[in-house]
Image (cartoon, rainbow, N blue to C red; front, side, top):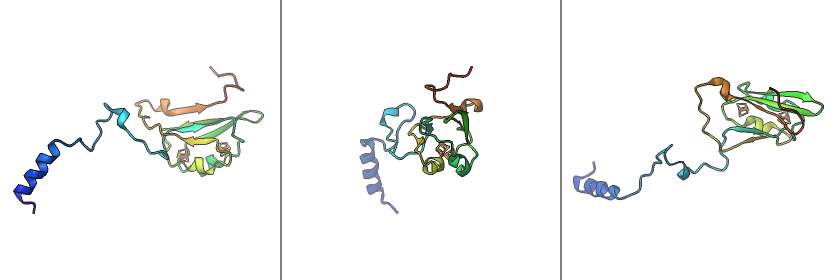
Amino acid sequence: MIRPGKMIKQVLGSLFKKPATTEYPFHKKTLDVPARFRGKLKFYPEKCIGCNQCVRDCPSNAIKIRKVADKVFEADIDLGKCIYCAQCVDSCPKRALEATCEFELASIDREKLKVTFRDNTKIAPTK
Ligand code: SF4
Ligand code: SF4
């Protein structure tokens, strides 16, 4: 049991210390996201060879690779299904997928979480 004298000393000492917590989302600049954080996925279409290894290894069925032209592939990623395990990143033999530090992905519209990555240098955007 903590004696009252010791407790008062601890309380007074805490009064002048900076809080250990961060007032998110009001102070975003103080957030220190670890370098190997597994956030929103990024796809590099120019590196993809369409092997579908990422699709086979995804435990959530969250990623699909589509061939849109000769040696040109697009990725459909459902961020609402994704569990951010980064298995697809590890499985890709061409480093065509990357887990970024982006974590603010909440949305009340599930359709907005379905993202298509396409190579706009090779394919005209669809309407
Ligand atoms: S991070 Fe995991 S759940 Fe998300 S698409 Fe990749 S393998 Fe699937
Ligand atoms: S594992 Fe990599 S190269 Fe293979 S289809 Fe997926 S993203 Fe493309």
